[in-house]
Every structure is written in C-alpha cells, then in structure tokens.
Amino acid sequence: MADYPLPHASHDLSGQVALVTGGTSGLGWRFTQVLANAGAIVVPTGRREERLDEIARLVESEGGHAHPVVMDTTSAESIIEGVAAAEEACGTVTIAVNNAGVPDAQRAHKMSTELIDTVLDTNVRGPWILACEVARRLIAAEQQGRIVNIASIAAFHYAGQGAALYSVSKAAIARMSEVLAVEWSRYGINVNCIAPGAFESEMMDGMLERMGDISQHFPRKRIAHPAQLDSTLLYLCSPASDAVTGTVIRVDDGQGSR
Image (cartoon, rainbow, N blue to C red; front, side, top):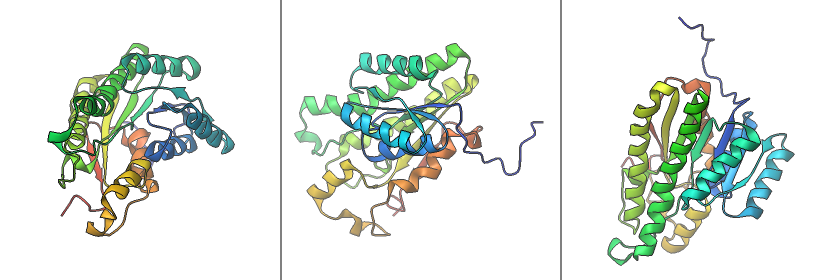
C-alpha cells in the first residue's frame, strides 16, 4: 500500500500550471491569487487585457508567477489558442478552473436569441471546450490533472428571479463535471465542481442593484466572501483530493438549503 503521511492533506501546488477563466474579476480574481500562493504558475484568462496585466502584476508582487492570456470563452478558436499559448509559455496545463460565466437577468419568455446564445456559449459551450482541450493535452502528455468547474447553487435551487437560463446552464456544468469524471478517470484526470451561493463579485453587484439586498432572505443574512471558497478550491486542485472525482460541492452558506 502507498505510504501516505498523517494527515494526507497537502495543498502544495508547486510545479503545477493552473489556468483560470474569468480571471479579471470576481471569484476568478481571487482564485488566481489563491492558486499562485499555493505554488502554482497561474494563467489568468479573460477578455480585458488591462485587468489581466493588473492581476499578473499583483501575483508577481506577492512572489508568485503569472502568465496572463487573453481569451474569449464564447470563441472555440480563442479557447484552443489560449490553452496552446499557456502550454507554450508555462508547460502543460495541469489545473483548469472553469470560472467564467454570465447571468441572463431576464425572464425566460422575454429573452432574445442573442442573449440565449451568449449565456449558453459562455456558461456551457466554452467550459466544455476548455475542459476537453486541457484533457486532450494531459492525455497526450501522459500527465494527471485537475479540472474544477464553477456551477452555482442555482443549479439546484431556483428562486424565480429572472435567472432561469442561468440556472439551467449551471445544472449543465454540474452534470458535465460528473460525466467527464467518468470518461477521464482512467487517465488520472479528476473533474469536480463547486456550486457557490451568493458571493461578492461584479456579477453579484449587478444583481444587488437590480433586486435590492437579497441577503435578508438568506438564513445567515449575508453575502459570502470569496475567501470562504479558498479551502474548497485548494482541496479540489491539490493532492489532498486525489481520490475525489465527479463530485459537486455546494458552498452556499445555507442559502439553498431551506
């Protein structure tokens, strides 16, 4: 049997290359710093080049290593080229965090086909293409890896507040994590999912502007802080979770449990 230390709970990501989509703001901004602080070379991606440069400078100022890559997750070509650029600059991507996402903020029967396409391209099609491209390269390199997809508690609990398609797209992300875990388990690629509740972010700021202080309807009457996701992200990206794949972890501060 393998000789594991007590406890087997290492979060050391030294030697890993971690790509984070939506790294220019919100949860992705925090995820990029957390993975860098754990020792990974981070590749924050997004469409806003100035914000990518800003997060890269922040990581470097804290002693980490970052290589930002401009990526549009609605474009298959941009995703594939972005993963290739990350590999060329940093080596094979061994950790991918599918974080980029957009809300719909519209009642289902009022949504334009353009908005439908944007939500599904960003929240479902893009993450699928990215996960497959990262996995394809890991398999070719005969390396193990971690893919962490960011869903939402809305995948399981819908409050009826004009986010029907968003909820459907996040349910797809949860199921995507489960089925890809089965396909890639034999290659040592773990695919898992985090389903956050309401956390502070630019997206949440927009929701609060439209709907008012929704936190007063939550059991703990608060919007959670991104730092409260650190431990779950590190667990799923690190050696500590080497036997965990196909799992969806809800981190919702009790918001979806009522």
